[in-house]
Each structure stands twice: as C-alpha cells, then as structure tokens.
Image (cartoon, rainbow, N blue to C red; front, side):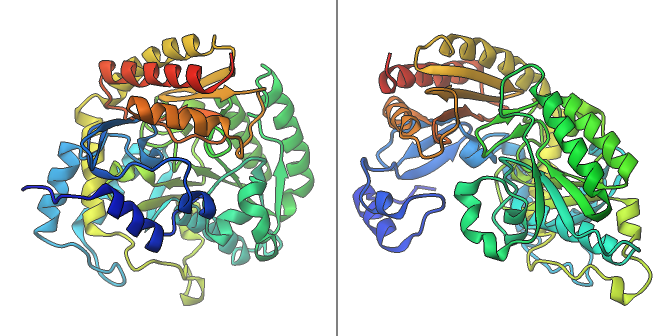
Length: 443
C-alpha cells in the first residue's frame, strides 16, 4: 500500500488551527522557535518524517513502545483479531481474549494478585485502584480510612483522583480545590546520597504510624519516579514499605504503568523487592504502545471485599474496558517476553547504556547521571530538577537536527528506548545525545 503524500507545512498549519496538544505551552506551540517534525511512519525504533528524514525514538513515544513501533507479533495479533471482533462491551458479556489475558497477567505478576479489572490508560488504572481501596474500607468496617499517602514528586495520572495523589506542583496545584485529602512524604529519590532513602523511609514511617487509622492506601511508583525527572531509589525501600503496610494493615498500590513490562530489568519492578502489592496498575507497555489499554490487578482480599450484595458493587467501568483488540495486542506482548528473550537483550543494552552515560557524565554541563534497567537520565545544570528550564529544550532541538527524538523533562534528558533496540541503534542514540549536550550546554 502506498502511503499518502503529506504536505508538512500545510499539516503543521492545520495542526495549529485545530489540535490542542498535551503538556505544551499554547503560545509556544502557536509561535514555535522551530518547526516540529511531521511524522508519517513508525517502525521499530525509527520515526520517519513527511520529508523522509529518520529519527530514533529515544523516549519510546512517551514510554509506551517497549517493543518498538509495529512489533511483528503485536501487529499480526491485531490483524487477526480485527477480522473477528473489534469491540464488545464487558457489561454482562464474556470474551476469550480478555479471559486469556487476565489468566496470563495473574501468572506473570507477583503471587497473590489474582483478579484483573480492565480500563483505558495509566490514569484510569490508578483511578481504579484508588476507588477500590477507598470503597473497600467504606464497606468493610473502617469508613474513617479516607486518606491516601503518596510521595513528593509523585505522578500517577491526570484524572482528578490521580491528581489528588500527585506531587508535582507545576502540574497539580491549579486543581487543588477539586482534589481530596492526601498525605505527602519526602521522596526517597530526590537526593543522590547513599543513605537518603533511609532517612526518607524514616519520615514516611513516622507519619504513617501516626495516621494509619485513617489511611486507605499508600500509592507509589516502584523504583523510578518518572515525570519527576526519572528519580530513582533502591528496592530495599519498597521491601520496607511492604512490611510496614502489612504491620499497620494499610493497602499498598504499586503504579507500574511506566516501569512495568521489562523497563527496569525485570518484568515488573516490584519483583526486585520481592513484594506483592495489594493493587498493581499496568498500562503503557501492556500493548507495546499499539493501543491505549490498562489493567489493575487486585488481591483476593480486595476482590472478596466487594461480595455480599448489590450495594457492594464496584460501580466503575469504561465503554472500552476489556477491548478485544487491545487484549489481543497485550497477549502478543506477553508472547514476545516469553518467547523472544526480550529481557535478556535489554540487560545487554542496559550495560551499553551505562557505558555511554558514564562518558556523558564527564561533560561539564552535566551534574549527574542515573540509570535503572533501560531507563537512563542525564541531569543538566546545577543538579536540581527544573521542569521550566530551557536547557533541555536546547538539547532536544540539537538532537532532532542530528536524528533523534529526545523530549526532555525540563533540564533532565532521559532515555527510554525500545527494549528491542539494536546495539548499533543504541550507540547512535547515545552519540547523538552526547553531541547535542555538548552543543547546547555551556562548557
């Protein structure tokens, strides 16, 4: 099939007239310092522009393309499912792709997560967990448990519920009057000190012990706080948190929307701490970036807390929850992990990324680098995270000119390439980043 001809200038003009872009200053988009690329095709780690230029997708198109664009297994599964059934409601109906996927997710995730609730995206996956935890306590003898605890710098999505447990003021403060009460404690990842996560946990423990009688759940991004600037902390913090939540009978919600499906070096980040959360939220890599889709897994205790009568129903659901086409894509993603040694290949790439980050870290414009699995980050400037910084955007433009898409988080340049990236592609991406940083930051 011949791709349609795209006029880049006309497409950009139509875009400015009709499209409202996410997380983008409106005036800057309408009067850009440079023209954004118009993407016509995507395959593997490559984006092809309407002009025919190729860009390495270094950020997995907002962290979703863990197997690269158009993975053959995912594409074939979607084509096969498309010929049978695109969508059917799960309201009183059953379909095999959703059942099979639920069985496989239960088998793949930490033991004890044995029920799957489907929704549409990462925000709704966490929203499901928040609502399920809240309603559980309301109808199981502890209605005073109405508060959630989360970390400073947390990002769990953009619904009002997930904004309530968020901790990035630039994103969340304007919605303060709409949000519910939460407790925020220091992040274990904001300082590079070897023992800072210990101090941060001590602060969390003190607060949680004092407030446990009214806390419904702790919500956390395991190992990596993504939107905060790819801030990272060790598995030991998670293990201690699980033990504390068990002692105080507080639910633990693990938001694995970003870190799940191989991104940290294990299929799920919680595995590295040897823990099972009470609720686990999945999206992004769940379909390999092919379709918006999400799943929230729950323990039997939580599921059983909704039995006993119609008034205990979980009154929540989306029109497209359990979409058969998305289920087919997700089943193909699990096939890839089971049959194609995706994790083994990603471990090799992680070692190569570590070598490149060490080299980049010697640049005088870089304050520090960090890495967990195939997530790498370069902190520019004085070491503090600044989402409004122009430093990252200068690197972004310099990288585009050299053939890589590296959308920054303020003054943090990060790398979230496909786990299937080839060694030469990763080397090219890291060399482009190094050259862009050299050009865009002061010596």
